[in-house]
Length: 288
Length: 276
Image (cartoon, rainbow over all chains, first blue to last red; front, side, top):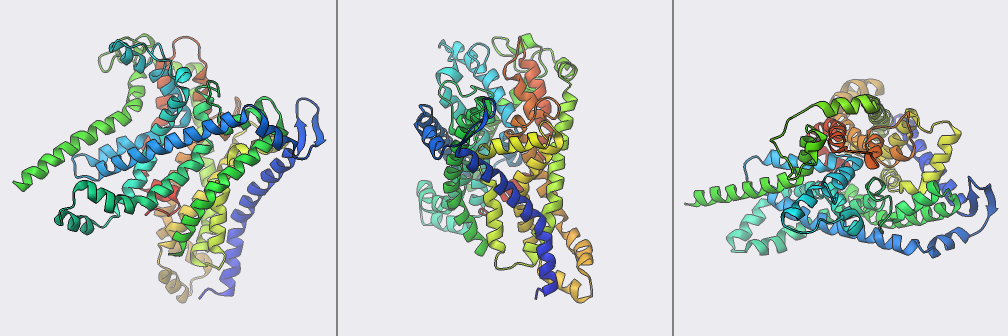
């Protein structure tokens, strides 16, 4: 089938992409790993030599480390729980016959296209501001004391903002999965007298299992590295310093590159554990 | 009887779905509405929904004070440039993997995808350092290259899935008729691949437009795109809701419109074929 000629042509055509990605992966990765074994303070003496695993130990034993891991897990877990649960409900709703389905779909998907800095700032100022925000107006209307959301309920507020951004993604993918469900199966079960709840539990949910897994994995990879939402709202204050933000502060704000790089290596390992699961699913799908 | 029941159910579905849809869309709608108010009206208590004096003043002020067009232009160059460059590099690679697959094709595809999983913050300083050394910090070309590289796996992957759907027999028939490789690509493959390439282009412009890690960390004044421009509103002085809204509306409007056209591609492009 494929001739020798076309095989070598194929290799040449792939070369630029492979070489670029290889360079993009290996060069910075090698540098990060090298820096992580050095005492490296660009503004205070520069490269001060090798220190072994010192940075790795110091990064983990600093008082900011465990809280940052905890915050990261709470935010990722919270957003996943909200987006998957609401995503399934929304997908079921959007799958029903209705008037103006196309427009509703557009309304629901829209937040995904809003750039992170815009959504974070709009939520922060126009909704969550304790004086002029819409929530404050709403609270006062019902006679309650307005809440200073981003300082008093900072983590919940961030989860809320990020969930709003990612709910469309979960909904869209779950809706695609629901639509691929064999409708005859559902009709048959309806004829057999299965209640809507039973149909959901025994047919729809198992069918969605794989899509939910994919949503969880892909979102986890993106959520582990959310940055702009925290950068423009709290700057990591009020207990919202995630692992990503902690590393960012170590590297660019306090310019402790060795320490930050050790943190970076931890983040890379963490992301790779999640990615490995995703790769297995994607890989299986390539075979079929 | 049965008909009226389903009609009734449809009406309920419609009402619930519209209510939920509008609720989710509300922050965007509110931003757009606020952009047409004066600053005083923007913080009026109770909030004003539709009955206020509509004004375009904020848009003029945003452009005048902050040179909005420059940021917009940077966004266009960075998002457009990185996507086009990515497609130029990705088309041959995706083509060869789809039509001349080898034993290693699957591994290469998965490896490419895995580079996308690398957390940006883990390589922040190396990239920052390379940028300083090469004089790329705060330049558009630097960001074009970085955003091209972070989206290249998605571009290759999407193109690969589209090319896979083109029947190989047609290419073989062209080959039998004596078409050279170049002719095969130019006259047979390209016309069939255009829709796929267009969808890939669309989705990646959206992703690059909204990218907010590298654009915030690698730009200052000259090359800053809209993501960074909006972030500069995070520590404002005085009344600014209406102006923030006007700036935000201008920043998201083009991509909202593009996004509505690319709903279907979104699933394909972001799940790497794992959900169909």
